[in-house]
Length: 417
Ligand code: PGA
Ligand code: ZN
Image (cartoon, rainbow, N blue to C red):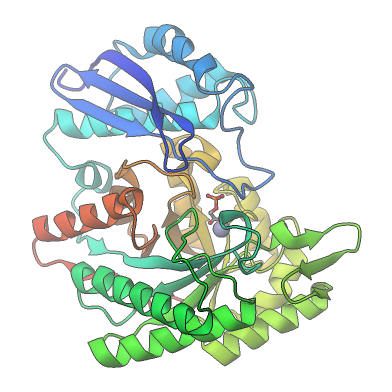
């Protein structure tokens, strides 16, 4: 009774790139939930469709009329059933008639309304009575590729993970200390650097991949020393973005180098060894399970090899990857698959097969903080949500609040890799 849905409201709001996205309110007898959908720039080809052709404007009436008509009177607690109804209304395999961003915003708002109906924070409603752990924040330091201007590195994201942090506050401030130091190091290298940033708040410098790797590594070492918190470098290569299917090569424009798949595997393996990378995401283009598996065989014991565009948070595609040993980690983005229950199914499959699930933001974000709760509720040891910028700190600051609320909070266990 407390969580019976009484009304659904929907509106067009801004995302961090200034594009329109959807925000949904769900009102129950005794609660309220609000959620907004993020959006990607380097999206995987097998993700569900974000919005139908007409965009956000074309879907607002449909949510208010068709979706609301079906969901009003249902119990928000029955998330699985509600997600099924959403998929039924859509009626397509890839959610192209409603859009996965529409369904995910409704699905998350319903979950938050259910939690609120019982006066619980979302993570407790979803996670039950577990000993909760705080995920380590994977912070974005330097942006390239599709997230920055044309003179930035080809590699999309130079990231860091403060693996030695003892609590979330120490972790997020270690990340911003490295972020600040990286700016100084870029400035030394390039007097003309304007301080410009990319879509996820990392610096967008006129540097080669090699130069960026050096600066990233130096900043990690210096701040680890100064702050006494061990910080490791990580990457998201988003390799599909610079794969040239005609040449069948990875084309690094900044360096003027093209590498075939074997050379790419060698190159990434060398980077992992040289810089002691903790985590490398999408080092191989999406669809190439064998290339991924070759790299994971070589490097999977010393580094997390993570699939984002490769798996698109889809349990069926993850199962294909598990079959061939494609990776040992997976990015979890709810809007890649369209509902919270499908997202959870993928997290579960990952964990069953020792794939480390990394809950993640998108490059286009809002101040919605839901993913902070998902990472805690589902015991994901890492959350990827930037280091600075309002839409990124919305999640990080929420983690600080969650830690404060927990009795005896512990950082996650990163030893499972
Ligand atoms: P996207 O990129 O949100 O632009 O798809 C983020 C990522 O590749 O991890
Ligand atoms: Zn990625």
